[in-house]
Length: 98
Image (cartoon, rainbow, N blue to C red; front, top):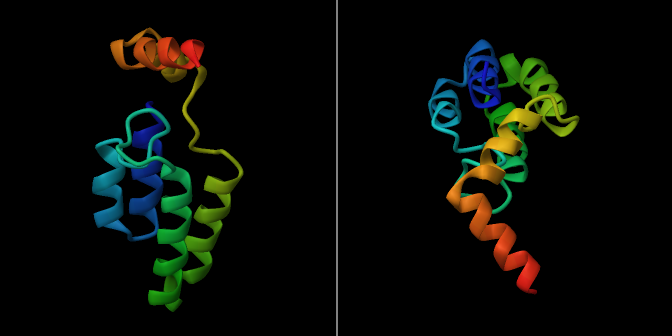
């Protein structure tokens, strides 16, 4: 299972369906996200949701800790796929020029 889908599933388990819908599109994913720092945005949003939902605070904070510890980081296969993509190749060319 793709890590974006694993994250979406975990978000649904703690009742954060709107965030899960975003995660399913790759919004918080290392390589698919339009964000510069998707993990930091995700952790910050989980902190906000934990405060907003005291009845689910513990579960949300546990999920946040899993994010911090890398449970939803892109897999090696996802990394290789990105590196082989046109976006990945362009990024590598730009890095090597600098």
